Each structure stands twice: as structure tokens, then as C-alpha cells.
Length: 78
Image (cartoon, rainbow, N blue to C red; front, side, top):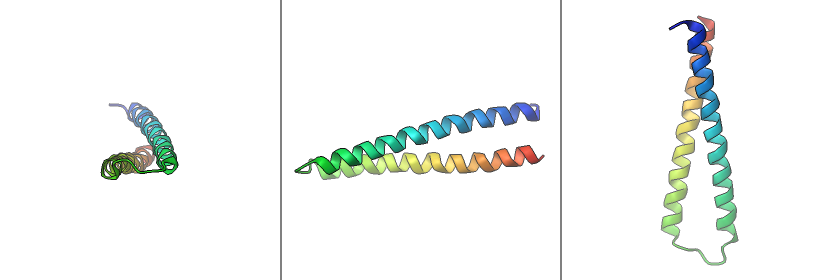
């Protein structure tokens, strides 16, 4: 595959990753706001589990973003 095409594909993938991160960050913020408004907590174990799963997703996509940013820099320097 040509170098320019590799760069283009990685840039497209990074755009998608950043979009997922933005969406998940918004979901986390909205969830935290809704939880804060509750007068009585619902099933806190269930809420904590869901929030932990969301945080895992954010951590995963943040890792992907950092890794592909480094890879893109490497590709551009070759």
C-alpha cells in the first residue's frame, strides 16, 4: 500500500476514534448529571457497573487515539 494511502486511512480512523470519544464523554457527563439529580439512589451496584463499563470504553478509545497519533507521526516521518 502506498504511504499516502496509509496516512489517509489512519487519519480517517483517528477521526472516527475522536468521534467515539466525544460521544462517550458526552454520555458520561449526562449520566453523571442524571445520577446527581436522583434523590434516592437506584440500584447503585448496577449504576456503578454501567459507569465502569463506560469508563473502560473511554480508556480504551483514548489508548487507541494515542497509539494511532504516534503511528501517524511515524508514517509521516518515513
